[in-house]
Length: 235
Image (cartoon, rainbow, N blue to C red; front, side, top):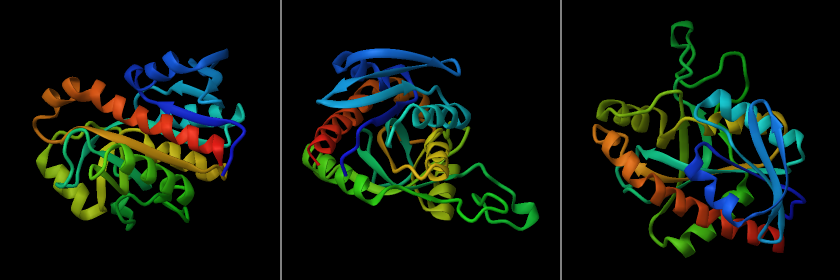
């Protein structure tokens, strides 16, 4: 499972600032209004970038990362909890990613299904998932969960919607980028996994929790990325 170049994406500054701090930057590349950093991290060559928020930003960033040579893509960041077992700071690893705001039900398609396309729920790479589980269980024993991550261009802050997304679509957490990244990786046959730390409960208190816990949650997901990259180099 060794890779020559590992791609890493975060959506916000908090999600890449630790990478910037600990990576020996070789050079930077400006593309599509984004800055891509290539360097050495844990004795591994990586390319990473801040995508910005939302599915379009994530899709563009992922494609550029792949075009620049990334052989796998890891996404690090924060998310809102859907599964009632999850608490703030807990880790979610993607078994798959799906768009919860893809809704063509008036034409007879199930919610989340992309019309006229074979796959709408994009499976994460099994080996990367297993490695993420191994690392997160070591670092955050009992606080790591694997499941479907739901993405949409919407900050979920409603208890009713949380229940709906969890019960109807089987989502364990919700965010705004993962499914776009997953689809682009699938289109390019590139392995991926999304690692998210819970910054809020995606309910009425989200506006309070998000700002307070984003830094802490970003640190948790960074620790997993750091340990994973070290393991990938050794593989």
